[in-house]
Length: 199
Ligand code: Z5A
Image (cartoon, rainbow, N blue to C red):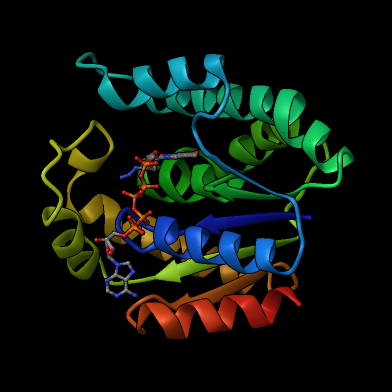
């Protein structure tokens, strides 16, 4: 089973992934947690370029780089792990490219769908959780962290408002796969909803 988590930066994905991992391991599952972009040496190098580059990266180049990182992760890690009986939890996947580069940057969604199709090679998530929080709320949470903002985090409020809108559209379009959760509920309440949806 491939479980993916989505939402704007600071929406609580990492928190919920850790709780779900504990829950699934207690139930006897072998669990592998991954992040996008990243989780292979090539994909981590692409991540470094995407998030830390001081040079401008064109929106199309951004799509191709995120999808290249994804293609490498799918073929070298996710597919083999699923074959070995692992439950794979991925912090972001194909929906991030639609929300961030499509709705955020304005790249044509049909072009993104085509790139995503190449990258995932038929591997759709079994279930996707979108943690929905207002941009201001997520920004307040992120501000509490001491780290310097990366290239994507510096994109500005309007960008994140559009990304959030993109997630709303995706949730409406793919009801059979996507569960959208109010990310302002308590950590425990959200975790209960997620665990109940997995069973
Ligand atoms: N990106 C893209 O543009 N296109 C793509 O195709 C892909 C990615 C795959 C990767 O960022 C960036 O790449 C991301 C999208 C872009 N950029 N942005 N902006 P990342 O991997 O470095 O980080 P992230 O995925 O955006 O999120 P994050 O910083 O790791 O946050 P999070 O995992 O969603 O949240 P958290 O760390 O679990 O929680 C944040 C804080 O809130 C923390 O203090 C928690 O204790 C607190 N929290 C969590 N839940 C709650 C609740 N329920 N109530 C109150 N407080 C809470």
